[in-house]
Length: 341
Image: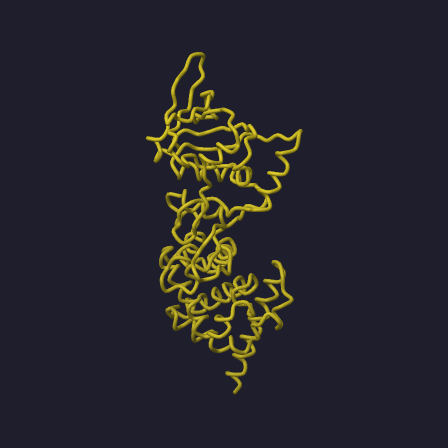
């Protein structure tokens, strides 16, 4: 079978070599694929496909006066045997692709534009990187889309984690949040939404961004990293959340009807965790799962954690402060009862 041939120009986009050309949308669709983040395997880096966005673009591009900026693609090096770039006279090049090659181009920035164009021969411009690795693709995608409307901040955080050479030192709150999501004895294992797709049975109930922000407040309040390594800090925070589950098992099991895993609950509980850690440290006691459980057992059951209870009306940063004050007051009242019999 004759190879697929696309005439192109060979140039550079800033510091990287690229091909510039035009091709029918249905051909580019047949030759390319989106690399959507699979949260279960950790492969990929893009957000899930948005049907409405893609259908809107299909309707638009069929209009008489429509146009679009170039699609951004990448010829994956893993498919090198299926494609080659041939120099021709006049500075042009010819991209030759094996007729049986399949999907050899990654849709770095065009999955929603191409997603519903598989049957349309409309001519579209494209810019194609030549042989970027998956890691380099992720880097380019993150730069292009860092301000994109609708792109999950948790997905961008996940990109940063994958691209960082020293995440525990550079972004300890992000490192710890990801450890909570992956560690076997964590109640948060595979429960954080990274911005991709998942097929696992557990429901993603809190975003990665939310968890790392709550952890950041814990780190700031306790200054724990001045005395503990990031991995030791992971264990302290794991001990706290395991203590929450042990103290409030029914509330944890029914996350939809309780505040423990809602934004207010996560932020407020991490600040209570900081209070307990500081108290243990000041008293010269080890702050482990047993210490957290003992502290929580004194007051946590006295609070109505349901979504219809007193924590229901709290929202935003002001709501977090009010929720923390509410929980601290409940804890103080319980202590007063114990002291005064």
